[in-house]
Length: 75
Length: 404
Image (cartoon, helix red, strand yellow):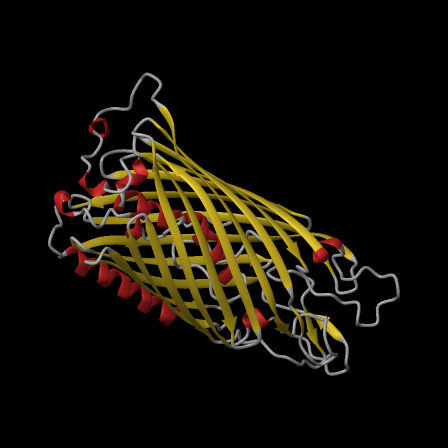
């Protein structure tokens, strides 16, 4: 498990470094990026309901910037 | 309900709309000029940004070996119905502070296994926790405060409280984000602490006071604008759980035709890394692709992939989504145990080897109201979730909202 975690962290760091070398997108060319359809989390209440559905019925939770387990009677 | 703290932070910087700027075209809007100045001395302006209400029903059916509501050596029922109304209010205090409050109520039927088939005397409550297993109401309130420290940095605090008949839970979190290269790159970090305090029941329904479980979580994340139509996000989360990590009433089938108590370690370390690609499509649509890798100290390894396609047709937005999840079992999972053996054991179907699929669809109608750009919206969403180890859930949800 430690090996998997180390590899995952390395991949994340590498991705961040590679992305850091990307060309800049100026403010006046971000029209589409600001569209609500491009929101990373979508509808917050809907996403929360779906997250509850998955995390209470699968052993794997967390890693998407949310705690894994705790907070309710199911885990 | 658990809020994606760092995810919200990424959204906060990737989409300046969350800072109170006009919704719909936030990347074109100039940044608030006073963010480069010292904080205001006089009271800043307070305004409601959005209000939303949503009601969701979860209709679950299936079988699991941790449930005693079935044959002696076989899996028992996991039938449950959940009704969940939610309300969200987002308010801004000046240009620096955004406050988001969410309340939710869960009304759950059959929340825990029914043990009446296993030799308990007539008159015994239908299950070990009595009423929570028949109808259980859970209430929760979440609060997120995000403060724009400067043009490129934000700080945030998250707090929540969860209450249900056998359990209380407190959560507190903090986050920080920093953007670079004209908001092209955003790095974020968050810490989160949860304490659960709950009743301990044995399988016969006898109560043994209170137990505690703690969850400590740390996240690192980044987002990067790749092109004028592409965003990529990544995050890593590490979680340590300690204390009583079972709900205390899960059972395991024993070879002498009785049921025993689930026994799990008192600590669990969980790692997960995820990546997400958001791509604008030239026909007024958007595509989101995600992948997550998970591993923990109980021996479970999981891969999850998901995709979502959105299409706008005038004021109507349609969504289609799919999700695939594959996990291996925890190392001490089984469906039949030796009653004389001492050691870790679980028959919980959630910890079994399984593949889970989900297909979802949604529609949203946005209606402008008034000359100031306000709008209301209606949304309906549905999802069918099914697992290879005999469980399926139908999820139906409707929402009504108002936004500035």
